[in-house]
Length: 119
Image 1 (cartoon, rainbow, N blue to C red):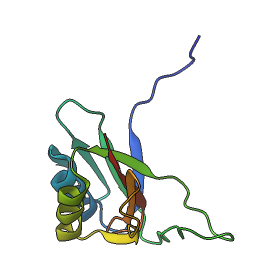
Image 2: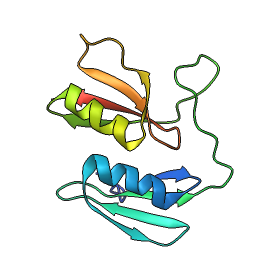
Image 3: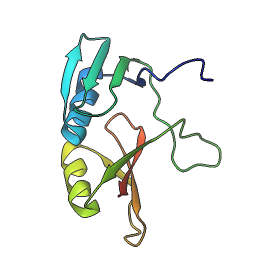
């Protein structure tokens, strides 16, 4: 029997509104909050939250002596179209060169890694 249920995934970042805006562009949804905490409520999906962390240090990916901490897998129908969209929104490619794979790895504007995964 479970002792809890997942409420929300929270990303630390220097600018919660800016990062919430990036993910709203990727996932859709509405952005609500103040300067220290912002929620992104996406239609039909779980919420993401963004918490101000002025000293945030982005994870290193990939790195044997660094840690990615965590990453998001975002399911898409068209990898090429999704890639174009996230790059226009400010994502940076981390490992997107292999066009034969069913996933590509990027960093959001605050440096958190995420994957676009073909469904």
